[in-house]
Structures are given as structure tokens and as C-alpha cells.
Amino acid sequence: GLEAGGGEGTFRTAEVTAGLLWDSRDNEPAPVRGMFHELAVRGAVGATGSSFSYWGSTANLRFYHPLGHERLVAALRLMADVLGGDVPFFLLSGFGGVEWRDGWGGVGGLFTARGLLKNRLQGEVKTVGNGELRWRFLDVRPWEQRLEFTLVAFLDAGQVWTDLRFRDKGLFRYAGGGGLRVAWDNAFIVRADYGVSPRDGTSAFYLDFNHMF
Image (cartoon, rainbow, N blue to C red; front, top):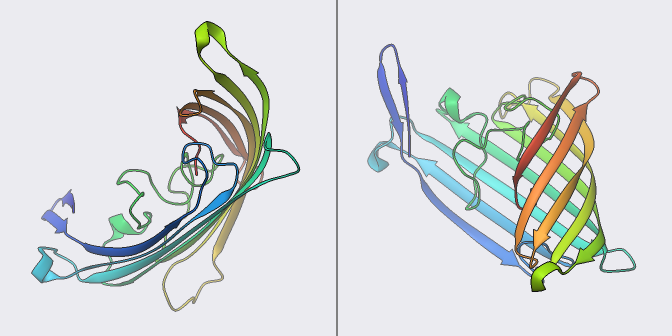
């Protein structure tokens, strides 16, 4: 659940969530081939302890495929999230699903669209597409440890509609850039990315752990 405070008091959400997962990745931290798919639904009513009655559904589809060699991998993530009912404004930016965390934000930022401002796009209907080309160009073994260096080129895009009636045309934005991954024993990964949004004129540098997807 979430709590939001304001001038007139505190509001609480408490959701019930269910979902289906399919995971065929050959290596979870840095997959070369396989898929990860998730379908999830969530809902909140007074009986769950929520101040709002609403529902939501999320689709998260990921694909990984080597391009001629395991050192070169194409990765794709497609996400869609739909909300309906009495949706509190502070939930309009987020996604659902078992892997999504409170505070990660909506369309824009480190976890969805690098180069766009965090929470740049918000609404009841959200879509995100992320494409990455990952080239593992160097492997070294200092002190009997394995280090792998991977260059990444990416393109992120998202489109959001205000509500389920699709009365607006939907706000679309995209961003692109590149980055570096340093993996220790193919498990612990440090991620550095730089993204640019040509239309918004914004850019950002990101430093985090693990691939974005």
C-alpha cells in the first residue's frame, strides 16, 4: 500500500495483486537468449483498506536473442499499463507487476525512458518500448575473477493517454543513447547510461546496478 499526505489529511491505498509469469531466460542477470513475460492485475476497494476503489492491469514482455554470436545480443521490452476507476493522482505515473517498485516512477527516467525527465508522461494508459543492442567486447580475469565489459546502444519510447476513453491523441516521446556494463562473474553488474531526448531537449547520466531489463 501507499500513503499520501496533503492539506486535508492522509490517504491510503491497499491493493490485491495477481499475475502470471513465464521465464525462459538462460541467465537472469545478463540473458543471451530467452523470454520473460508477465501479465498482472491489481485492484483496491474499501474492504482492502484503501481510500480509493480502482483497478489496474499490466503486460510486461521481454525478448533476448543473440545476433550471430553470443557476444552480440538484441534485447526488447514492451510494457503496457491500464488503470480504471477512482484512480488517485499519485498512482498515475506507476506501473504494476511483481518486479515494479514504488518510487521507480512512470514513463521517463532510469527505469523506463533514459533521457526523459522522471515521470515525464503520466496517465491512466501507459505504453513503453525499450530496445537495446548489447556487445560484450572484452573479458578479463584479474585475480581469478571474471570481468565482462559490454557496450550498449539503446532507444526508449513511451506514449501515454490521460484516461481510458482515449479522448486525447496521446503524448509520445522518445530518447536514445548509449552505455557501458561491467559484470563481475556474470552476476553483479554496474550500469552506466547516457540518454538524450531530442524533442524535449533533455539529457541525463545514469549510474545503477543490473540491466534495465
